[in-house]
Image (cartoon, rainbow, N blue to C red; front, side, top):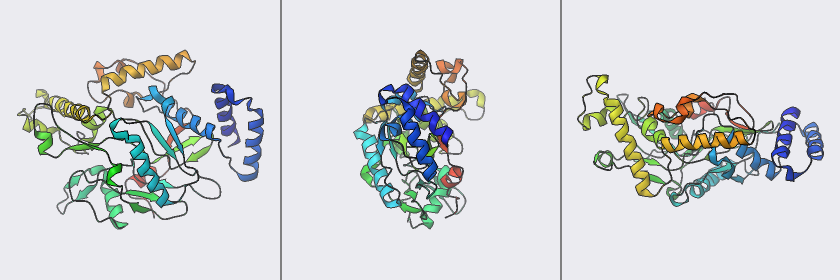
Length: 366
């Protein structure tokens, strides 16, 4: 931990020299680690570390505004009930009536004495996946395990639609996981509608406005903050080309193609491509109509190149995972497609807990 802490303190003072020479701070940090096995970041270090972790997120195309991330320092909170309550406040503040704001809420860290809290949901807002008697799934198949866990923990289920909001599954420090229903006013949703057709309304399609990742560890200078939900805003293809279109998610391409009268007997008719475009048109149209912040993949690709230029001008290289940076629709029509990227992970960063994906599927021990 000494080396990781020292590297971070030096990075902080190098990029923010107004905080002074790092020597005195390094001496204090080393002494604290020797005495307790860990150390405590100053509020300034915490905010800097969280923003740089976003800057270092290799899979995120929307990093241009990394320095605008607002940081809620709630390191004094470690119990499940308080975490759940503050997560609802996070969603209200981030949603901001539709003008979505980048926000992170940081709860108690892991220490040698006790673990920090954890959220089992991948995102603060997830839709339930109910398994019917015949094996069919109502809702989001990705969340069947988490849905079953929520019910084992006492959730009675929602009205049974394809878009029932799951409760938060929160595990406080030294506690078993518990479920907490999000208040209605914390969940900003957008009903979907196509600009020229009625299928989206007929099918009751909608999606939530704030994509708040909640199951990753914020790692700063050797300290893991295991409960640090954070969000930017959606890019349209995340919903229209993945969540609603993927075969293992809502799988809407074929039903939509049939509704549009397309020839689905052969892939050479490009029915998947044509249905995908109309689904994504509906997503962008609906968010615009509702006045909710959303980026499109062409604009966000241009912004990412601007981010590259700004960082290079400051002498910083930008690492990226090509398979995530390139949009899942019209890839070759975007400028990020025609480049290569170094995928080296830099710190601070957001990383998965060792058991994060198991927990997100609702399969962890409790």
